[in-house]
Amino acid sequence: MRVKSEVWVKAYLRRCHAEGVPIVIVRRGDEAAGAIFICIDRLDGTVSLYGPAPTGSVESETDRRWVSCFGSRWVSVAEADRYLAREREFDPDLWILEVEDKGGRHFLGDSAIEG
Image (tube, rainbow, N blue to C red; front, side, top):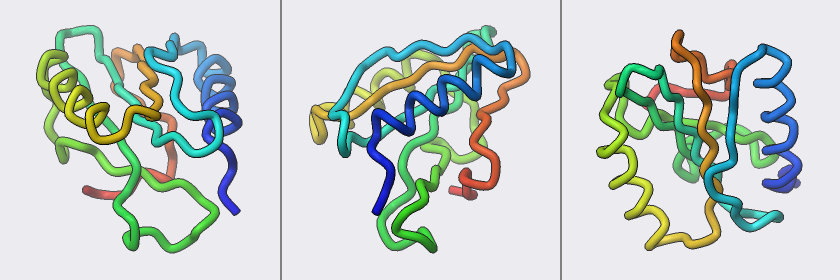
């Protein structure tokens, strides 16, 4: 059984805070099963966006896996916002987290897979 979204988000917030990196919940989704998107802002006008890995591309039903929504490209904030707006139309229960890190670190470790 997968950890509830709200519990995962709280743990991720603690991880970022422990690293001294600002993070904000931009949109609060369904506490039990809302999809989570993580926007990494390098504070230079570019961002990277991570979302849930497609079903079937993960090895475990209990662990969350992430893929970069734009591959290895860093995109403008406006482009990421458009992407998230389309996702919200499809799934109004999603979470959006924003991490501010000049180094572009996502703190997802091995959970981030190549997209």
